[in-house]
Each structure stands twice: as structure tokens, then as C-alpha cells.
Image (cartoon, rainbow, N blue to C red; front, side, top):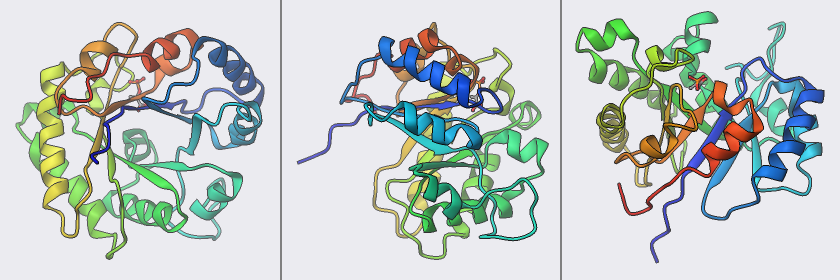
Length: 258
Ligand code: PEP
């Protein structure tokens, strides 16, 4: 029997919400968004707020949680960093790798991202690999080249590890936190490239899940989630307010449209 396609909706809280605000958010969000079996919801709070998130969601196992970043080493003298096994020990199920803010602010290069992806998998976490082009790269007609480079570099580090299903987020850098959003057609075009590159990768049999990220909001969620090839969204700013994110989580999705 073929599995029914359901959207994955993820909230990246970045460096917002300590434990107290996290508990407050969950209390209010849970009242606005009853559990639904036809979608997957994952939150990425700051690492220090993960225990509070888990405490607050004891009665809501549908609200899943992940870690925003892990180090590519297992342990070491890396002040401020956490490893994938440490994150797994706290009870998270997911991890981001390659977010553009990690690439631009913290200097993560393709090799670092490959290492992080590998560590997430080894720790039994589900990674979401983020890829996307800058405005200069897009304007110079380099969209496909950049996406291909980022994905191939990350896959090249897997060394035969199984990543199933692979989950990627296409996040054009020019649309992150800027209020600029890719049109549904732009998203579909980029998602088709990501899907093709991922499918070319050796040993890949599973269906690829591709999220769109970049200024997703209540007023554009239906159009973006309704675009061909979009399997879900990764949301930053608009996930910080319970009513806004609840509306996004209720976005219209057609499981048949791929
Ligand atoms: C993100 O941080 O992944 C993101 C897409 O942010 P925003 O929704 O604020 O553009």
C-alpha cells in the first residue's frame, strides 16, 4: 500500500525563547492547534530550551522537537558547542544541518555540513539538510550549480550511511528573514532541482521530502504548501507567535500534487 503523503511543518526559533517563553508558547499553541494525524510538526527551539519544550509537551507527542545545530566532532575543546549524541540524549528526534545562518555567521562550509549530517544520522536523529542560493548566485544564473554543490558535498560525506527518507529544506538566502518570499513557481523549480540531484545520488531509493523556507507566513502558506513539489515548510519569524504558527500548521495541502 502506498503511504499517504503528509506535509512536514517545522519551526526554527533561532536564538529566541528561553525555557520560560518556551513553556508559555507551548501552552498557548496547544490550545490553538489540536493534534492532527495528517501532518508532522517539529520545533527547533534553542538547545537550552529543549528540556522545557519536552516537559511542556508531555501530553502532546505530536509536537516533535529537534536541535538547531550540532558540532561535527563527537566531543572536544569547542566552547559553547554540543554534539549530536548529547542532543539525542536530551530526547530530541531531529536536527538541522547547513542552515544559511550557520554557513554565513559561523563559517560552516560544505565539509562541516557533511560532518554534521553524518553525526546526526549516527546519533539516530532525523536530519533536515538546508540548502539555498544567495541573491548574487541567483542573479548570475547559478541556482542549479549551487544547489548541486551543496547537496553533493553533504551526500559525499555519508560514506554509505542510510538516510531514509532524506529531508531537505530549500531556503533561498535572499528570502530568509527578509519578508521576500519565493513565488510558488520559484519554489517548485528549485524543488525539482533538489529532487533530481538527490535522486541521482547512489543508493537512494526512498522518496525525498523537500521543505520550502524563507518568509513563510499565514498569508502565503496556502500558496506555498499548494505548490508542486513542496512537501512542507521550515518557518523562522512567523513560528514565534502561537496564533501565526497555528495558522501555518493548518495550511492547505494536497497529498496528490507532487
Ligand atoms: C529560517 O530561519 O529557516 C527561515 C526560513 O526564517 P524566516 O521564516 O524568518 O524567513
